[in-house]
Structure formats: structure tokens, C-alpha cells
Image 1 (cartoon, helix red, strand yellow):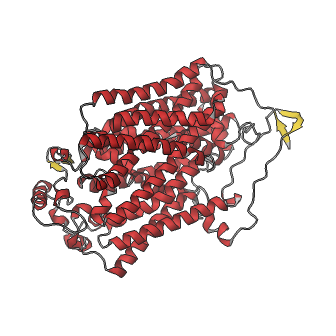
Image 2 (cartoon, one colour; image 1 turned 180 degrees about the vertical axis):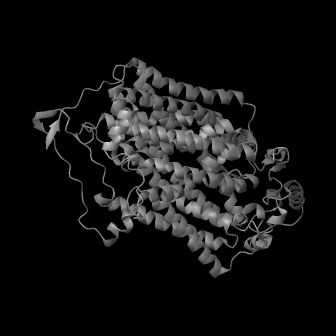
Image 3 (cartoon, one colour; image 1 turned 90 degrees about the horizontal axis):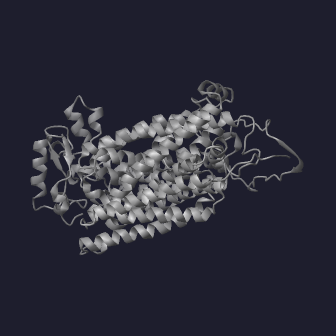
Length: 632
């Protein structure tokens, strides 16, 4: 095979190091600031959920930064470069995800007064369901965090020659430092700063790349000629890697598992001072998701225009597609000291925000779901120190998991596959609890196990037996304009093909990775309902209506009779969840909470007395002073 001469690409200069180091210094400084500012607030509630007094602005920025990580900065442009701009269809998926999260899941979590989303599962079902879900979440988050730690370290290694694992451990240390010092408030405000860095980095690349490649019209024409603008492929084949349906439907399931029931998201939403503020944070976050998505897609098109005649991956100039963006940046900014450092800071901003949010969420669920239950007599000061200790432990574990990420292939597919395999069954479990009152704890456990089994079966099968190239073949990439090296030949690496491919390898194992979440979710829901009916469904009157979301109101809005029938005897008409006279209904619920009876499904009087109050002026539920008690 013909070898090509690799263009000279300069490494970092002094200004690049200064810009890059500034990111770490400012991020750590924010942690120190909040550690000093909040030093008199010693409760675990202040540390883990910011005292539940956050507003929508910083929370929205934090959500956007956390889930638009280095996977987006590095992986999405490379996906567009290789497979085309169909990634923009995630615009639709993000919209559905935010609507479902804010209108279906968030109201239940917020009004039930929980800190860990998995508390809900104990209230709705029982403790074993809560513990099982918590363990799955911890495994999912550690695996995902390993991917997002490894991705920017790889970028830094590509453009500077820095030691790869030194970069990984530096990232882990900085994240753990400011997360442990400042708690959730430090995480949220650091995320806001890092999102600004991400946007500046993206826009800088877009502007310079567009100028160097002939302007927007030229880039658009090149992308069109290279088949990169074939966005709407309506092929219904579920084995195709990216089509309109796999992204719109599979992407919605995948990201709903990330947003709708994920502790990292819900924890920041319930840290807001009212439900209205929490919903606004989600909708403002949607705008941020759109902006980042558009920037990433157009970066991929600009990159294709630049490399249209000499693909650096095919030519062997880089070792993985995820290195395309940093390689591109080092070329177009070769005469602009400091700017490559800005881009690497952009990639690391995504990682720092995601890792810090994950560490904080892991510490929260571990403290609330395990430590607190085992040691109920911990003082507030001791609870705070235990929470900080958990942050350190999970910081070390998540950083160490980056080693496994090096074996997972492309960062986008790896990260979304992890979320799909774990997040899909979790989404199904919470959907069973919130939408289907008939589901009992046996159905919940059986559904979760079935969903996990199905999702991991297809996911691991796809890893062992990769899909045929015809289902995931990149678009044409040319090396016709690369400088040829006539003196040598580069070695070719033939992909290892398993000697035996079972029948499922070309069908079940070839399913698009975006459908893993849908498989797990639907498997969980169907199994959960069947087992519940076989073993005796729950009675609606035994379930507190705060734990159920009456979605049937949307479909039976014309008839109170049919709405009541669909409520399955759950008394929504006398709870704040009903859209009637909520002020009076809240008074009724408070009186009920002060009664002597103990409700079934784990929701007793002590829990009910901490349900957030209703503010008629804001027409929203707010966190009341009652929450300062030991429950938090």
C-alpha cells in the first residue's frame, strides 16, 4: 500500500500552555471560592443539592455543559466528517426528551421531596428495587465517566505529545478537588464557566476554518458534492447505524434515559428553589443543546471541506477518527499561538463538567441510598465529611476507569452504548412506576432484570461480533491530494474477523447502537406489566398519588369519567398533581400527611411531611423551610 508524507504539525507553544492551564486554575478557584463562602453551612443538604436555592440560569448552563462533553467536542464532528450531517436529527430527539423530562418525570421527583431519584423507587415499590437501581446507576456512571475522561486526554496526547495517562490523572485530580471542596454549587458554577469556554472554542474553529476554506457557500457546496448533506434517510431497517428513525426514535430513548431519570440531571433540577425554576432550567438547557449540536455538526462539515482531497485517517496521519478535530485545529491555527490551547481547553471543559457532575451524583446516591440508611444517627457535620470522602473515592474510581475506555472504540458510540444498555432499563423501571399504577414490586424487579439482560445481550454481542460494514460504512474519503512517499510502504492492519459468526451476528447483534435503550426500556415495561398482572396488580387506592403522573389527562381531556377510569383508582382528584384548585388541594394533602396512618409502598408520615409546598404567587411548587430537618 502506498504511504503518504505527513504534513508538519507544530506542538504546543508557551501561550497554549498558559491558556490551557488557566482552565484548570479557574475551575479549581471556583471550588475554593465556594468552600470559603459556604464554610458555615455544614449540612449534607447544602453540599449535595446546594441548599435547594438555585435559580434556572446557572442550572441550565450546568446541564448543557455536563451532557455536551468532550464526546461532543471530539466525537460529533468526526461522525459528521465520516458519515454525514444526519447527526443534526438529534435536534428532534433533544426536543422530545426535554418535554418528557419537564412534564412527566420532573414534577413527580420534585413534589415528592426526594434527594436521590432512587428514593422514589422505595416509596413506589420497596427497598430492594431501590438498591438494585442504585447499583446499576453507579456502574453506568463510572463506565461513562471513564470514556469522557479518556477522550480529551487522547486529544491532548495527539496535539502536544503529553503523556496520555498523565493527562487522565490530572483531569481526575482537578475535578475531584473542586467537587470535594465546593459541593454542588461549585459544580454548577464551574460548569457555567466551562460551557462558555466550549462555545468560544467551537466558534473560533468554525470562523477560522470557514475563512480558510472559501467561505460558507464553498463549504456547503463541497459537503453537498461529498454526500455529507444527505440528512433524511427514511430507511426503516433497524440494523442501519444512522437513519432518520434510529436517531429520532432511538436517540429519544437514549437521551431520555440520560435526562429523564438520571441522578445527575434530576439532582440539579431539584436543587432549584421552585418547580417552575427547574422547568425553565430544562427548557433553557434545550436551547444550549441545539446551539452546541449545530456548532459540532458544522465543525464536521468545515473539517470535511478542508480534508476533502487528503483524509488524514485513511492516509495514516492519525490513529483514530476521534483525533480528527485536534489534528485539524493544529493545522488551521499553526500560526496563532494560544488558540490550539483554547481548543484543548474547550475539549477539557466538557470533560471537567461531566466528570464533576458524575462524581457529585455518585456521592449523593451512595450517601442517600446506602450510608444514610445504615447510619441514621450521623450528625450534619459528619454527613458532610462523609459526602466529601465519597467524592474523593469516586473521583479515583472514575479516573481509573479511563483505562477501559481505551478499548471501547469511537467515543460517541461507546458513550451512547453505555447509556443505552444501562439507561434504557432504568427508564423503563421509572416509567412503570410513574405511569402504570398497577405495577407491583415483583413486576418492577422482573422488568429491570429483563431489560438489563436484553440490553447487555445485544450490546456485548455487537462488541464481540461487529455489524457488517454494509450497515455502518463511512462515506467516501479521498487521499488523491496527499503527498506520496515513494521510498516506503506503510503496513496495513487487517481487521480481526471472528472465525465463527452465529446467525444472530448479522441480525440481533447488528442492531443500531441507538436502539439499545429502546430494547432495554420496552423489555422492562412489557415484562413488568405481565409479571404484575400474573402476581396480582397493585390497587390504585393503596398508592399515594404524588408518586403517579396522570398522563391519561392528555388523552381523555374531554371526559372526567374516562380520566377517572384511567387513573386506576388512584385518587388524583385530591392531590396537588391534579390540575384543579391546587392551593386547596395542597392543604388537604398537608392535613393527610399530618395524620396517624401509615401508607403502603413505603410512603409514611415522616416522608409526607417533607413534600415541597405550593406557592400560589408563582403557581409552582417550592422548597419549604421544612426541608431543613434531618430528612435531608
